[in-house]
Image (cartoon, rainbow, N blue to C red; front, side):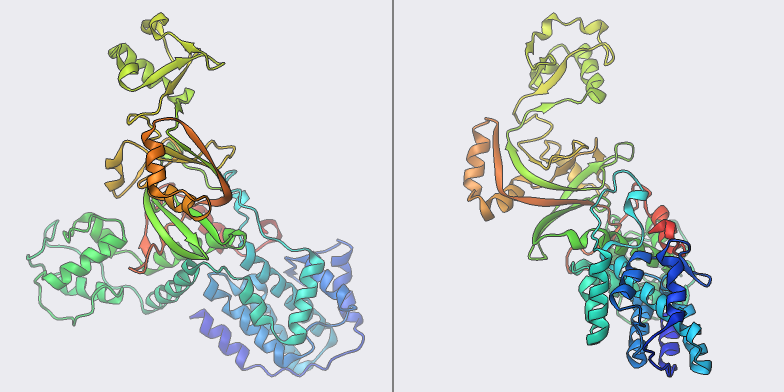
Amino acid sequence: MKFIRYTALVSCLSFCIPALAENPYLQQQLEPILIGESHSVESELIHSPEMTVATYKANNFERVWSDFAYTKQALNLIAQAELEGLFPNDYHFDTLMALAKEIDKRGTQAVEAQFDVLMTDAIMTYAKHLIRGKVNSKLLSDTWNYEQSDVTPDAAAKALLKHVKSKSLEKGLNDLKPTLPHYKTLKDALVFYRELDTKGELANITLQNKVLKPGQSDPAVPLLKQKLQRLNYYSSGISDETSYDTELVEAVKKFQYLHQVADDGVIGNETIKLLNRDYSEYVNDILVNLERIRWVDNTITERFLIVNIAGYMLYLFEDNKLQWKTNVVVGQNYTKTPIFKGQMSYIVMNPTWTVPRSISGGIIKKMKDNPNYLNEKDFVVVDSRRNPVDSKSIDWANASRKNFPYWFVQQPSENNSLGQIKFMFPNKYSIYLHDTPAKSLFQQDQRAFSHGCVRVDEPLTLAEKILGTSDGWSRSKIDDAISAKETQKVTLSNPLDVFLMYWTVAANTDDGLHFYSDVYNRDPVLLEKLTKPLSNDSI
């Protein structure tokens, strides 16, 4: 593995560069960067020029890395970037190793200066990636609008010099890493799947018949056991037995469950395709999801909600621990739920629903087929000033979405498309969480059915957990308010951060890592940018 190679190279170095009181060679490397003439040292781009120059200003333009026993430890930290799903050569690793070997042989001051500047830039850039990710999320889509954590060059310089002086750089970098338990789970999985990838793939499973059901036999069963054992789903021994027995069925069911396939133990085309998946694909899935966590983790407060759009799940966290979760329905592929951070400030019980213009044509069509449709579904018609309009006065036969000047408003009821409650975090996308009368959709494995907003499976329980902590609302009080069928707005005394995320790999509970379909096809673009060698245009 590359990581082993990096670590071995660091361990074999002996550093013998003498510390200098003055270093004109260092100034020679820094001057073009300082005046903006160049952002490179020899052929290596400097990715964090402002932070790098600020460090040497704060250090009186003396070398930062004069203690080379400690510098070796710092190089090891760069090598370990692979464990974070990042890439050591984005931080000049191979070049630094080559320079260190050259210094070890000849000890020229010019090479020492090159090494010093590149090492400073490497640590600065690595630190920056840990707190906000390598890829700028805003470059992917205008809906990827998370606030990026940042620090001023002077503050970064002060922190780096402090850690180098006190030899606490490892702790300093660790403090920048995401703290969500999900991040560590993904890191552990990254090591696991990389090791499998190093071993190499097993042969693809091909069934004798198209489907293998519990109790049947197939020559592919021994290979099936071997694949599931490698993936830690099956622990019994491997034999030539071809019977699809109970123990193997249970292993397949768990595999299906964690890969969002009907967990009935029946092996068909979909399950076979997943079983034959390359380990490198798992690695890539984990890489992009580690990056997505880095985008937001350092802006997370003690109490927050995460909606995982790709996983159709909502999570409530308190003190950085998962307290509760429930299923959600999200936007269809052509009405994607956007990705952003908001702040829930109020909840509306027994909400009304104003039908968006974009879908009002469907109601007009239903009125043509059934003149009593509005009454049956508790709709009223209003003008642009919200004044009631008599629906009988409208020429429905000639009405269309384009010539219809009114709005449909659904009143609080069991029929209301928003259900009995909605959770508001005002945003430019007009997205919110809400209840729904269409409960059966929550039982589907794939739940991309909405027009963009997020439907919550257990909304009243969510309201209880949000309001009960700081606003004193019991479940019985919530139920009474709902029963009154009067619209009521409840302002939160402590607004709640809401993150609409897109995780195609997630640790929902302690039952294992869940792998989800890339329903919006967002992983490939991020993977390409993440694995592309770093340039100043990408930071």
